[in-house]
Amino acid sequence: MQLRPKIPLAKCPKTRRRLMAASCALLSAGAARSQEAGVAPVGTGLLEDWSVDSALAYYHEDGRVQAVEPVVNVSKVLADGQSLNFNATFDALSGASPNGALPSHSPQTFTSPSGKAAHVYTIAPGQLPADPHYSDTRFAAGGNWTLPLNRVDQLSVGGKFSVEDDFVSATVDASIAHDFNHKNTTLSFGIYNEYDSLHPVGNTPVPGSDFVSLVRTGGKSKDGVGALLGVTQVMTRTWLSEFNLSVDRFTGYLNDPYKITSIIDSAGNTTGYEYVSRPDQRMRKSVYWENRVAWTSQLSTALSLRYMSDDWAVRSDTAQLHLRWSWSNREQYVEPTFRWYRQTAADFYTPFILDSAKQSTGFESADSRLGAFRALTYGVKYAHKLPGLGSRAESEFSIRAEYYQQTFNEHVPVPSGLQGLDLYPGLKAALVQLGYRF
Amino acid sequence: MKLDRLSFLCLVAGSALVAGCSSLGVKPWQRDVLAREEMRLDANPLDAAIDDHMYFSKEASSGGRSFAGGGCGCN
Image 1: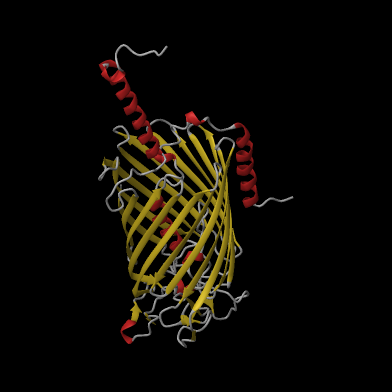
Image 2: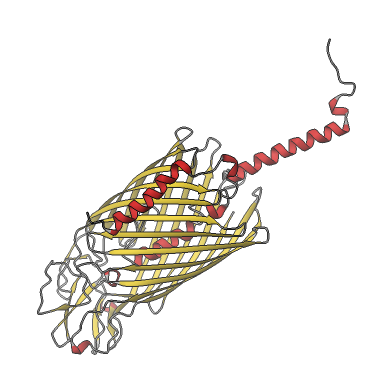
């Protein structure tokens, strides 16, 4: 006997409402999952089904370099779990870049690397020598493809390419990740290879050669390989931890072709300059540990610690804290940031060369980036969620500001002729960034 | 045996994570908080990239969170 309802389902208003409600709930749940997984809704317009993240940053050093940097990143998660990511960056830098020489009680005259007569500059007594004709532009682009191999393994391959007026760089990388422990633990391993080609303005100075005699060679290159082993662990419902070990090795021309070191006599008078001479290989090892914790529905923190060492005797410690406070149903948030950094000097770092002394290693550099210093960064970001564009659920506008300060804390004894000069001026810089993603 | 700082940090953090692997974690239906944007390890990739570029050009260290290569002639 066939059972038939007395009233057809579609004709029963109560049942129809229930079916419609259930259908809506299922569709909503599907949409929510898609959003959570980063799968953009399908659309027809340009980049309609891509996530777009963009920013415009302005960087300004006190009395030195300034830079404008627009960045855009587009990504898409495909239905089969694959994901694509492309990014592009443009930098325009200008201003005065320290050339490495010491300040002096006498005026100092230098020629820019271009060698043009118009690019001869004189530094007043007591001022830090900096090349006022510095300018550079950089364009960088990269991409990444992530491919699930099965339910618990995924492969990722990527590459990036950048071009500057005097520098070309290409990098390829690949990594594999394995989930286990019910996807609470992810073990990943990646390798990369970077190749850089340098064509300095005015050709490449021979390391350690005299600044005035202009002993130069042609283009140079350097090659780097690196590996990173990482573990990501879900600790609790509100705590995620990541631990990475990495090592890399660079060989080739590792100098900064525009940096020089002052040669002084025992009285402290500058008698000449020579180009810096860094070793032609460097191996770095680092440990990185990050913890993200959601303390309440509004407050979360991200604390990262890093220790790095290399065979140039540089040791560095870094601690960075991001704190996020959300309100208005998570439509707005403010994110203060604090970063503390310190490093020891490379074993060949010297702020000057005494003309009576010979460098024991044959290497020397007055490049302050290889000296011993501490740096602090204070920052804050504010973001506001906005209605989405097209079929997107939402977009976000953000503004971010940072202040960065370097302070040198190890001063070597200096001859009397250098007394009263600020040999370690440090660095103060500010960054302002506008961001929009949709 | 003398441990340098790098080895010590590896040992402490590695042990904590490995020990945690077997006993820590959540069930699939307990991932609501972890699914929040700010709990992603790459929550703000552009901010991180711009900061990394600044630090790469001003300091002797880079990388750790990801690959250390710079792709920049600034250092």
